[in-house]
Length: 169
Image (cartoon, rainbow, N blue to C red; front, side, top):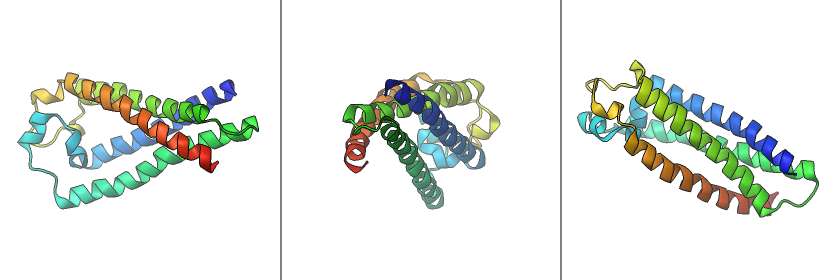
């Protein structure tokens, strides 16, 4: 069962990571202001707040992303149960959810945040009027917050979803 668990985490965690990352980069490419709340403080202070339309669009986009971030790991847990032929244990379900979410969180931190946003900073990420601001290169506060919330959030979500999965599957 351990082998199946690790394979599911790697395969399905990679699929989850690629889908969510592609969606996030697409959102940033077409309208970076949708993600304004994730921008550095000096950048947020230099631009007007999100409009109601931008906020609604962000919420509308969040719904399918939320479905994907629950459905893919849930499918993984179901496949693990089917492969083993045994009742699903809480800890196996928790490990699958946590493994996939932590994989996504690390990719988000290392590739999307540190490399793409803070190191490379492609033009489509820079909001008009904020070119050259220090926040685009100061990754430390963002990394600190991501390491705290990017670890605690996935672990808490995995704990809840594992409990639900054990009782539903």
